[in-house]
Length: 368
Image 1 (cartoon, rainbow, N blue to C red):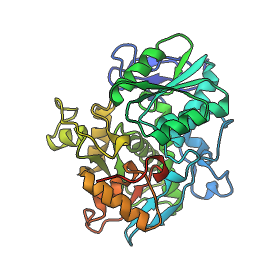
Image 2: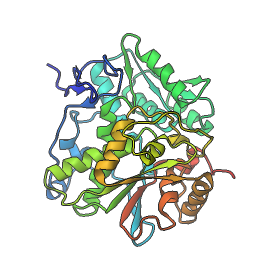
Image 3: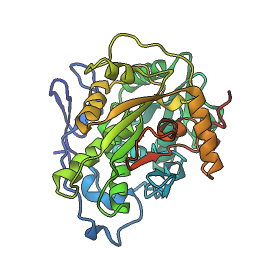
Image 4: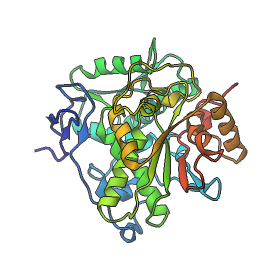
C-alpha cells in the first residue's frame, strides 16, 4: 500500500492511487485534489522547530524532507498601519513557487520517474528546475515565447532543459502535457498536482504563527492559476477546523485587467468561466492565464470566504512596482499587482496582508 494519500477528482470523484504517475482525472482530464485532512499543531508546540515551512509537518502530506533549501518563513513587514507585506520573493529561487515545488520534487523522488517535465511562465519552472537539481532528477521545462530572459537563464542555470513553445501560456501547458503522457514521466504541474497547493498553504500557516494565532481581516492574493489562493483556503480551513482560528479572513483575488477571466465570471455571478474574455499584453505575466483549470474552485473559495475580485491596470501595476521599490522592496511586476489593487484605499481601513511573490531582478521594471 502506498504511504501517500490518494488523489481524487473534485468533479466526478474518480480516485487515483497516491503513487500513480497519472497527472489528471482519467475520466474528465481535470485537476486532482488530495484526500488529506490534517490537524495543525498548536501555536505553543511550534516553538523550537526547524525554521522552514517543514515546521508545519502535521499539515504536509509528505515524509520528512530530503531536498529542503530552507524554503519558507519569509519576513512580514508593514506597508501602512493596516497593511503588511509578506516577502516571499526572499525564497531560495526568489519566488513563492518554492513552497509547492519542494513538495513536487519530493513526490517525484518517491515516484522514481525517468524524467520530470513542467510548464511555466517562468517562476514555477525555475523552482521545479532548482529542486530537481537538488534531487538529481532530469528536468524539462516548457515555456511560452516571450518569457523573461532572466527567468530562462535561471532555469537553465539549474541544469534543466528549456523548451520554448511558439504560443501562449496555454500552448506551453499543452506541450508539457503531451510529454507527461509518455512512460516513466512525472508531470510537476503546479496547477494539476494538488501537492503544490499543500505547499503554498504554508504561506497562511506562517502568517497565522507570526501574527500570534490570528489572521488579518483580508488576504489579498494574485490569481492566475490560483495556486496561492487555493493553498490559502486550505490552510484557513485547517486552522478553523482545528479551533485555532476564531474568524476566517476574506480572500480578495487580484487579476490584471488585461487578462481577467475570473474577474469577468465573478462580475457575472457565474460559478465557472463564461465564454471567451479579452486578452491583451500585460506586465503581470505570472497571472496572465486565460483559462485556469481550477476556475470553479477559485471562484467558490472567494465566494465562500466573503471575498471579491479586483482588477488592476498596467499603469497601476507599474506605479505600484515603483512605489514598492521606493520603500526598499524591489519585486517583479506580477508581485506588485496586489499592492496596486489596494494601495489607494480599496480596503476601507480593514487589516490585510499582500504577498510580494517574485524578485524584481527576474524581469526588471515594467516600462510604460
